[in-house]
Length: 141
Image (cartoon, rainbow, N blue to C red; front, side, top):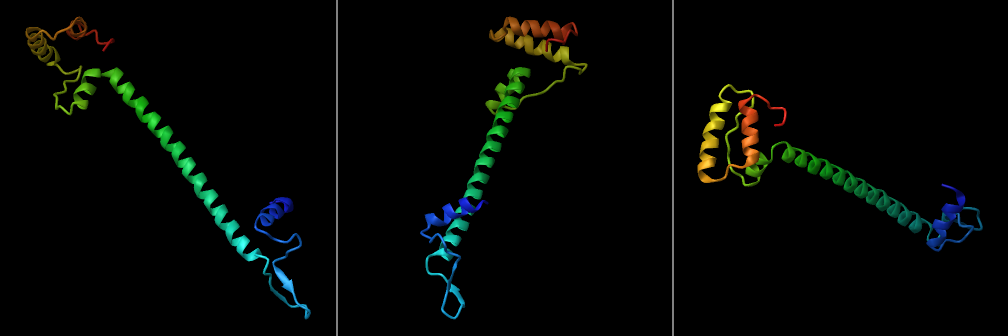
């Protein structure tokens, strides 16, 4: 730290310009100065500690924000990949998973399709996905 900055800090605490932290007596012995040098030094050290702590908090908040953004981006990617699974997860509903490479996928899909058509919940998109599964054209899944 430059002498000028140090002097500015000490002047804020009421130090004399020429203060060395000690008072000289007539016998040339040194005694602690009563201008507040020691108190100011302690206060300055405390302020510097607080600045370091504040900086650490700011850094942690920035890291938390970055981590939250990454988690949100990942959640968005999962929802884009399989919106129905995410929908069930949000509702905290259990569900059965059948991977696209399982040999019984089409049979399971037939059962689901039949039931959903009867209840009126089978959509055009559902039919498109179903046709892709049946024809093994799963590039669009």
